[in-house]
Image (cartoon, rainbow, N blue to C red):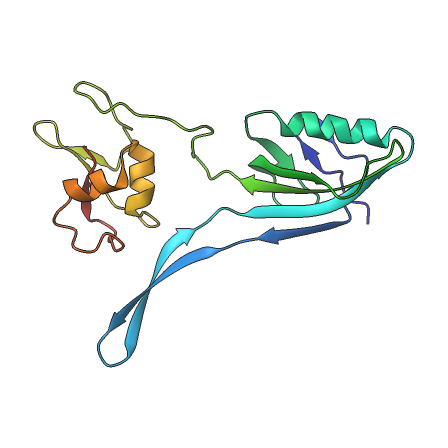
Length: 194
């Protein structure tokens, strides 16, 4: 069976890396209840990570590695096509040379972090002064006055909402005194984000 070559943005590997691992992780919270029991809550999946290592061999191996390094320095995610992993958008998070490179041989390792569906590709700083608009997703409910409320969906945490709306976590906690445990929010719960 011949596998298609691995690609990221406009770089195509001359041959697929030798070793790679794909990591999936789900963050869990444990809430203790009386009599030694507990309740588990999924805090959502974290990023999927593709790590691997390989070699460039032959005439021009160092030049090929230099082309890959140039792609690494670009400050944006791109489309990652792997022969056995789903095609996804990812950040090129790590590139490491594993020995002193030669013109005809370079050993390297790499790491890609998957970007979630509509995740921002770069850090946005929101100015929440009067008159600024927040994310107008369907789960945002604007009440009367200047208060903006968000309806919690599966996988949300206060930390995630603070990042999404560009406010400090302690400010978000202060806006929501009705949330007694900042580490525990429920689907359908209203959270004030402004």
